[in-house]
Length: 267
Image 1 (cartoon, helix red, strand yellow):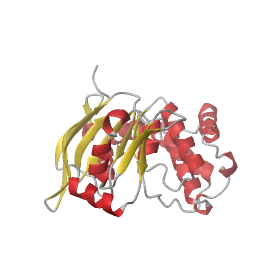
Image 2: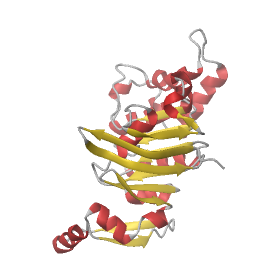
Image 3: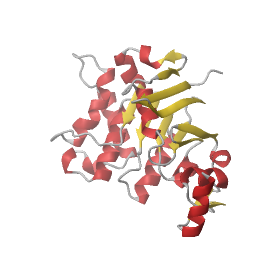
């Protein structure tokens, strides 16, 4: 079976400095994958290469066997939805109007939104528990509320590939788990960046662990999150355990000056 998303020898340089260095990986269809790693590891840059915001220096990205850059813009918008880390400014727009913008790739200029499309939008709003926000203005919402609204807009787009850069950013612990649980239940391939290794371990089938633009681990969380690999990647002493509520691999951290110096020596 061909992979849904295939990345081959992807590199991206700025001023001859490699921010992504010859990355290769394959994702199966309808999988949920998190890219994890320290700040500056290249996590967001990988996403931006995949959805076409930046042009890679070399390498190739294929979705269902087709080179992504060769897919016409309209069809690409129908197949790939993006929720970026930096919340865009949508001026003084009501939430319901903003979410309905996700339907645009599926409409011709003369088409009106159908009753079934209205119902589809309402169902997404219910799933994300934002019914109370429908008639409020986007720029009056909190950061966490804005994040959930933008995720709703992306889901209304009905993508085959959903890309999210730090979807749990600005969210309290309740909504972090709600959003990641929802993403895990979608009938879509999900690729996202996540800072919290334990959230990624609990809700993702696959992890890509990066350090300085290079892939240091790829696979199931149990395979990727080993004590030596996490400690060497983050230069921080860690212990590995298990979440007693989910049986997921769990990383425990502590800031011990002597142990932290030892961790640095191993990097």
